[in-house]
Length: 201
Image (cartoon, helix red, strand yellow):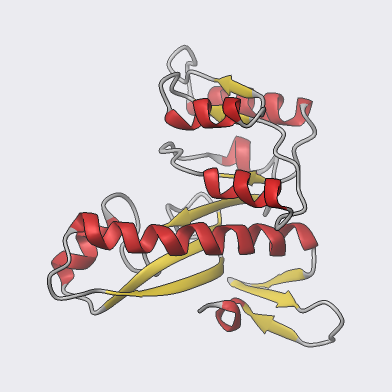
């Protein structure tokens, strides 16, 4: 979230952050948002009877503020059909692995346990399938022999911050289409569609 705030403030991202929402009042991101002059909102999931009830309450708050793109950052709850149907192909998430490898929690620990030589970060569209939506951007991060979860996570985080801002720029440009699961981005001023892999570093 801080990377997005910084990119908007620096003019690298032509967008406005309408609100930062958390289901936890102690989430550090809320204080960061307040310090940046951004509206914050705590929407506790516990009083709601079902997931759909909670999702609909989130949708109401976002729609009330004119939100058109939702960016998840550390929001550890699955969003269901009630939410995703209100923002079709307009919910982004960043994940610390090269999806579809190592979805879910502890992706960095999974990578080390599997002995992979390369992992990374992925920004994808959110679908009902956990970490299974179309991939917008990915970035590779080498796994070093003496890496710990902490050291690997720190290097992946650098790439997460970079490609999330790039992916948001692409998403709000509207110069993209979906071909099945493939996310195709049309470079402004050209007639050729390129896949997201050509924008990875």
